[in-house]
Amino acid sequence: MNSAVEEPNSVIDIRKNRLRSNLLLELYQSGDTSINKMARLFHASIPSATGIVNELMREGWINETGTGPARAGRPPVLYGLNSKKYLTLIMDINRHDTQLVIFDLHNQIIVKRKVDIRLDDSSTFLEELFKETDNFLKFHDIPHSKLWGIGVSMPGLINATQGVNLTYLNLTPPGVPLVSYLKKHFQLPVCLCNDTKATTIGEHRFGYAVNKSQVLTINIDWGVGLGILLNGEVFNGASGFAGELGHIQVKPDGLLCHCGKIGCLDTTTSAMALIRRAKEGINSGQATILSQLVNHDLDLLDTSHIIEAVHAGDEFSIDLLSTVGTELGKGLATAVHLFNPEVIIVGGLLAEAGPFISNPIEQAINKYCLSDFKNTLSLHISKLGPKARLLGTQAHLFEHLIVKEFSN
Image (tube, rainbow, N blue to C red; front, side, top):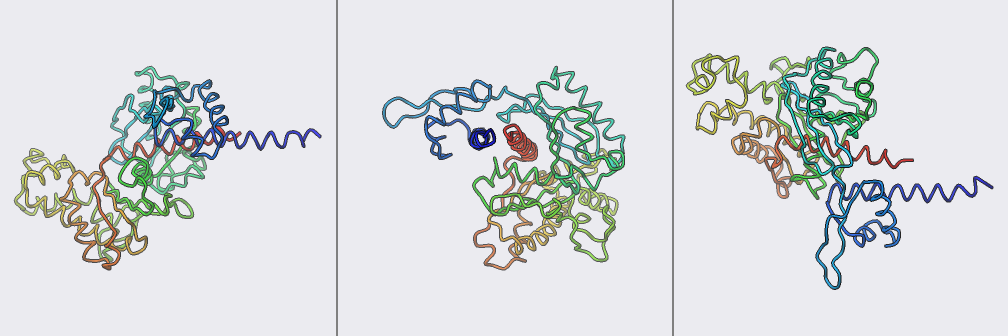
């Protein structure tokens, strides 16, 4: 008898919690809305939608934000996500530095700090990260109780289901997943995401990929990563590793890549490859202003100096980026033939060069792609820039936590 009575209630609760989580996801992604629109969107009655809104208001998830335009009669009351319900901590980790960012639930950055911790495959990296993060939270008076969870983006072969980064296994003791190690220290939920996939999520939710279904994002950073959006969903592959464009072989007799293979695309087109080529050119006597920009200390040479030189009209630097863009375009032409995207979005460090990198990429795609693939294809430099990765990590964390919040 009891089980027969409880069965319908549990089904009702499951449906109600699904509606609650879907409503909060809609408010997060699309902004304020009215009860009438909520009811239409989720195929619920107005009394049901009103009841759910009232419950979420009592729990502090949403609040009234004003009124909307009225076609006739009283203007509708608008409801939005309560930005102060929780804060989130985003750790943006790469091989050059680490950024710590506190977001509210409206994706507004509350505070951020860039720390000089470079990703290294050793346990000392996490020791430094814990120290810097604890100091950051203490300095800004943010107790763990104010945090909903932590989102981590980083390069590498990441299996999010297992919570591991197979490229950096030595960060933690043997057999301990990275996510478990972070959870133990911070006593908070943790979501781990590959940096390029985080960028793709950011572009899909807030950038040029909004309302698009077939998109490629190319992340030209210290390595080269490809984000793949298929039918409106980020494509991960069997283990979460899809999109390692930087490790397709382009030069069988080329340089040794950090992955152990020979002639990967990374060795010719990444930020590190660009800096290496620039130093080689300077040492061979090429005429360029790059030496002056670093006071003749080539150890200081960075991508920012090369991009500065490009915008100043330095022919050597322009040629360098043109060569890199052409090589990238060749690699992307293969991806275009495989995935037939409608949009390609260029992001990462080298995207700051603007048309000096996007034009040669586009020219190479035009040259090496079948013409029918290009008819509906457009290429853009990301309008979000580095923020795409932060917003993508934040969105990934929010979507994970909101489903978990209402899963019972």
